[in-house]
Amino acid sequence: MANEHIVIAGGGLAGATAAKTLRTEGYAGAVTLLMTETRTPYIRPPLSKEFLLGKADADSVEVVPAPWYQENDVELLLGVSAGGLDPGRHTVALDDGRTLQYSKLLIATGAQPRRIPLPGADLDGVMTFRTFNDSLKLQSLLAGGGKNVVMVGSGWIGMELAAAARTYGNQVTLLGLEDIPLSAAIGPELGKFFRQVHEDQGVSFRLPASAAAIEGRDGRATAVLTDSGETLPADVVIIAVGVVPDTALAETAGLAVRNGILVDAGLNTSATDVLAAGDVANALHPFTGEHQRSEHWANALNGGKVAARSMMGQDAVLDVVPYFYTDQFTVSMEYSGYPSLASGTSPVFRGAMEDGSFIAFWLRQDRVVAGMNVNQRRVQKPIKSLISRRVAVDVKRLTDPGVALEELLPE
Image (cartoon, rainbow, N blue to C red):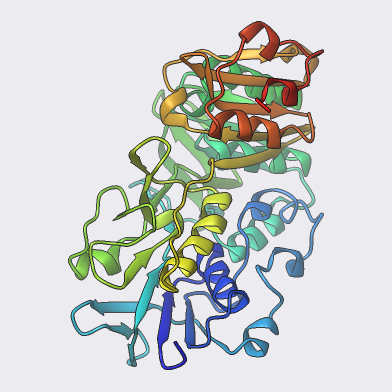
């Protein structure tokens, strides 16, 4: 392995974790990590939560401390992207004109914010949200409060940013295509819970509604015109309508692509010695037997580890239960499970939503396929075990707060 060269195209959590795993597990060959941005790899979830709110500093979002790359002989190329891939020749062309020969290549190019053709989207005060610099920019726009903020998008990022904007003391109006925010992800009952949390804090909703145009004066945004004809005052407009996997490198090389780069459970693509991980990968999951693409940080973290081990020739598969979390105002939530299996089922509850502290479970054939805990700590481990071990449960005991979740697990 000492004469091998692994190239990692993409310096997000998946790519940086892969580099770290290679070194911690003894890989002695060359490692080159390409980072499109000009700062060292970082973790995204805090950007819309604690970092945006000024509760965490820049060092806290780094995947590893900046000196780690040099100390561990990982060549980190900042401000450099892969512009072309030749799987037959095992070469990748960089946008700075260089060409690298690789023995293994990991594509971890992530995703880009989905953009909508909206008149006025180029005005000052209008932005999408994805990067560290986006978080810094939004923080500067929100700090001090007193502004009119219009959020276009009612998904997780939209709701988190709306909470942050309101916490800073701004007037916030949120537009979304759903009748109930987050209902596509967690169903209407829980979506109503999150909406009520926001409304109790002064956030206004227009649902279902979309932005038809952004109006401005002297180059700056002043209002959002909705599809119903309403004009909403707006000093800041944030467009958060999802992301699109960055598959350009794979597509130009002829790799199999469908809602991301298609990979097997070991994260191998259709091209020999080319793997993909993180937001860009649509991976075959052993639990469901289906391909699924996840945009959450746990998938990137675990995918980076699996990709590294696969590139080292180990028998590694991405088979962990998917996980994500959110913090909005006083609500802290964690979710583990398979949305595709939970879809179409109604949750059962341990505890009452009106108390603001509860667990929701989704079941199929008496087996838990997803679980969400709200303002409850140290319950994710048994929830994940119930899911991964396919334990048949008694719903009455499952929803009884007096029965420890661990008691539902077989010996």
